[in-house]
Length: 473
Image (cartoon, rainbow, N blue to C red; front, top):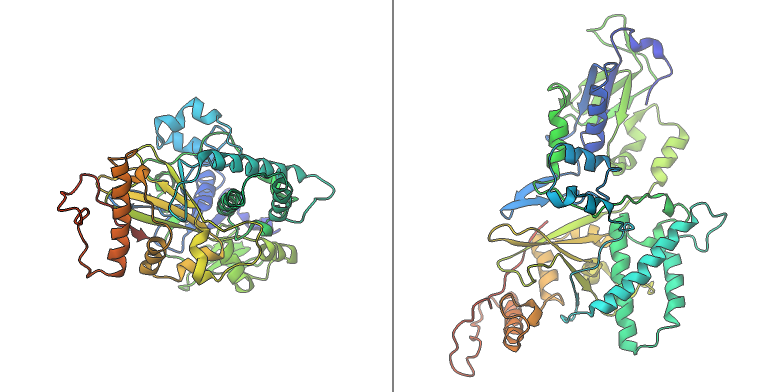
């Protein structure tokens, strides 16, 4: 934002610039301006005690956990985040390899390592792959309407459902398999909601959906934490640029403001902070979150923004994404497992009637990604989006844990046993393990019979101990 009055820019001294917000957008603007000799007077006003915004890495479970941003999407030479991360030495050898940079994902999430139905049984990888091919081929089609004179449906969701109904007409399997196919597709819809940051793909307009540009490269993470990037950017700034704990109250613009320390000089912008402090400037770069702008639009700018700007802020939509971290004493997944898909049976993207949030919020959970092993801790990271995600925020950690462990998400079967996979005794032990979890959940005082007690005493079997999950929200 700037005033049309450029006479206030004090020739030879350079303009004063304020950046409101210390997330990666604000830090990026500050770093670039600081590198230019025309902008020696720069301040970044950050409302909190830390920089980075929604890039936030924490030391938990004995390792690094990404509370905010998780991946570099499209880590290749056209991605400035990848370029900076590579410059600062923050990535691993695989992410930096030319092979990884050339992989074309189409912007689609890769196939899961394993898929479980909510009843506990595994889902055929071939069936999951078949439905993923169908779904992502349809997603690719939705990007073809960018410059079309008209679209076959108003939203991405409506288009996808219309096409799926047509494909269903050619399905020849038994009804149970057809229902399972729809449940898998429902999971993929939910994944796309996480990717697009929306409650429903019905809320995403079809015509402009193709504007998003997919970069090549297989998504990668920061071994030492994403926050290492923002820390390095901040470290490159002059030490007096960042001003923390300075929430802004009002941005006064298109005015003529004076400062006692600069007699005779006027400034078109005055940024007023919640603590009463004021910062005059020639230009202000506003990088606060969209939700904050929506909430404070009527009071944050004085005079009010032009109608077209204000309307743009009001009309732009956004959704809520959340993560759920579950810690296990021992993993039930195989060592090479990276992604566990959860398919909720009897769900379908074609059903419009939504159950009550308190009864079914957890069914929006798309699955879990396996985090790098942190010594004794084994951690899964689950993703959930939309109104269900917002409802989850109203629950206590205990309620979330209860929902995720007491209901259908209990995995048993030989494939879930760490040391006896592919055996019948591994399958039996895994069933006992999950039964014991339910017993412990519902009756912590119960005296659990030892496995095999009805056959006589049996010694404990190595590897049969199940891990107990603890959420970290």
